[in-house]
Length: 196
Image (cartoon, rainbow, N blue to C red; front, side, top):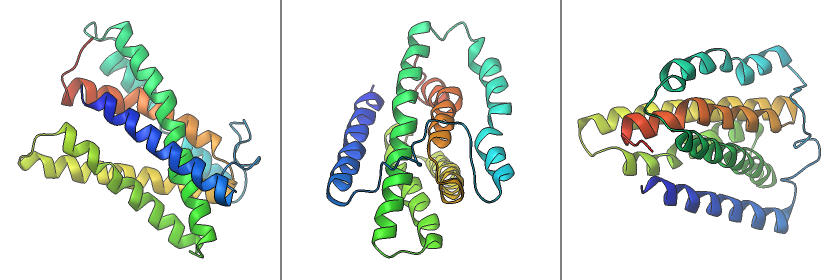
């Protein structure tokens, strides 16, 4: 069960970096960014809604079909996945979107540069999980490429929405839902063959 200590160390690390950065430079936890609302605003609001909430239209039915009706997955596993998702989604959004956005802005990086750099760093960070979860064989490169594409595109979309709306709570909510409905069950069941 190396995945659980790895996640805990990861969460401690990104929250430590975020809190230290915020205490020295500020700007990460703005009122507008963390306004508790599902509403988005700004340019292309219809596209923001489609990109943030649209994937739930297929994620929920897929979860029910793949995992919700699986008798081998226990209530304890669902609760573990739920707890990890509630922690991981907002933690990653606060660090990889809010903190990286502020650091880039204060470092003089253009908005386009921040839109490209933070998702690339977010994607490459997930290589650590691929190294620990997948055996080193020919399939590893396929898994790595898939995770890079998925995490980069998700990071890009969520950062784009942050730039347009100024808000982060909707991305935190969707990120937690995506982890619970898709990512964590997929890793636990298909990669780790782990059942409670």
